[in-house]
Length: 492
Image (cartoon, rainbow, N blue to C red; front, top):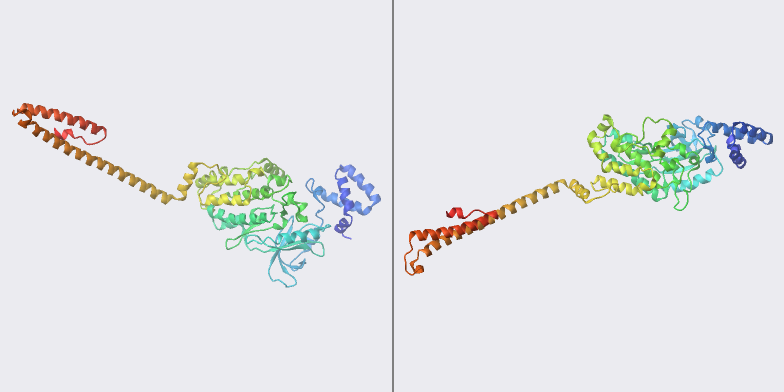
């Protein structure tokens, strides 16, 4: 009987013994195995093999679950033309520590479409088939134009887990954006497609948990597609997330890419949609700046883990971008720094807060803020103020604002000119009336009838005129204080 089948058949005893032996030191473990071998050689062999594997794994790996990597040989034997779970392998798409991915097709010819067949490097364990089928049915319901469909999942006759997904011919979103030299605005617009897909999955209580550029492919038509919802975790509103595909549950913390993982994900806490929002924020950071928010000199996984948990990330505004990346974004260094120091940088910072409570409450809110930035409206990531609202309005409507400003200026200038002209006309009218009254008063003063028939002398007439002119001058002084033309001088 194969070793993995021995583990399955004796799992209850193996699990109990693992709990006991993992608490022991090296010499005590050896003594434990000696005593066990005397009672049950089969169990001793299984336990010794598991402990041997445990030496090469991160501390605490085996305590997380029974799904340990025992099935290395079958993957090495796979080749073009091999059959797995009713699918014929056509050509490999990639290999890694967690398994391999192949382009495949149905071996029975029922469907001619090609699929991406994922083959995890994990053995068969009790209950795996039931869990795979149960979660496959839920994940297959994620029908969205920006999500690669999950067609099938299960175990073949040899116990090899497989996941058949929609095959997307495209490039990762970061590579696509750089090749197409998309601007910052165009990258944000493309990223909004991703947010719509993730929001759809969240509305179905499915968390992705491994969002990163490599899991977002963009086809030649510029359509983004999310991959790998096969390792998603189903969310419950009242309890800890219900389940995940078993081949992921034992190694999820090691399968994910650390620099995209949220702090709570690394701490193995209960996951909510906030974990995906964090990963999306890091992805947007790299998509716009071409740099990771973490110190690139950190190569040790444990140190990177500490940096993520401690929140030691670079701020968008303080990130240096190479000339090549600036060119691929069609932007100057100064303009990019200005963008990152304002609303766009604030959006990224809010999405990548270490505390989940401080992040956006939903992917939809994240998308709304980016949409507001695209349309030059005040964003929720920055405290609002009347001046910001006015400033954004002016930025959104530069030409209408300029035209309105010019119109107001012209109208104001015309109003001032009209007012001045009216005042001048009034002053001219006053001057004319004053001149007329002055002349009439002189003539009246020379009338003998007003002086008892006595002829008034020229000296008296001049004295009277001087008195009248003095009164007119005082009136003109009052006009001058109001900014009106001087009248008396014209009468002198």
